Length: 321
Image (cartoon, rainbow, N blue to C red; front, side, top):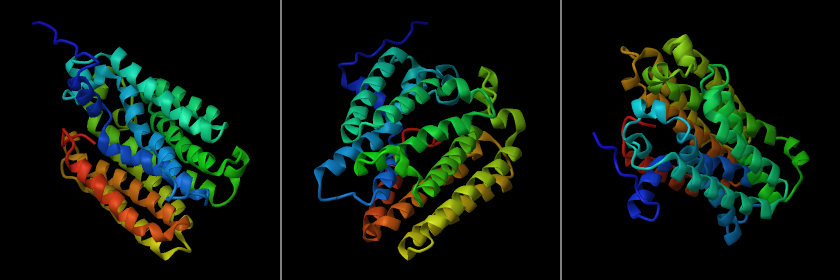
């Protein structure tokens, strides 16, 4: 059987393939994480075009980073995500890696222009993404390793808008925001492993579900969700508008974890709703955090969330999150 032809990087079909690897529905995750840090500075000006330029690296960050990590786990993706272009062999890891690294470097330059301290954090982000697949194979490291990379997004957002030094990151309530980001994303990663158990077993990825099973994974996810919930509740305690979005995230988080616990057949095919619930709660909790500093943006929060749901609905493979 002949191998499929590798698409040219100068063709429209290549860029359509790259778009699939970017997971466009998850651009809203990195986008809101960075935007929350920008808002926490208290100096974000939506009348300035520069604000939207600074938002661009965060919104594209997930897609560029996810495409890069896909280059290092083609073996398991051929089993768990055969629809992806790398799995089909119509694009090469070298092509995807080149575009991803180039795009990430360009986005990093924008953030560095805003604040030279972002040289450090941009470098850490790229190094973390390039080494993530190694840590994913170790059950005790995967979710935490991925989450610390995402935590750098609100950090860079805060620094880019404020122009401050990293010492300002210790000012309350910013540490609570970092706790919210870390544990809500850790839960997304952990629960996301439920859809790949068979593929991970076959390819030697000793993720938490592979080693300890479905039930233990969900119980740990409960703990991660609770810690994120409490951090978000602390942030929103004095802002009623923010509390509405926070409560929506709480309800979705509980519904997702409950479904994972009570699923009659605890199989990969039934992991979609619990995983999607972690993404939805992540976005709603971070929208709530933005409203702590900018309560008048509640309408923008609604539009952002609805657009996320629309893009999620149109994803190319309904079983994948």
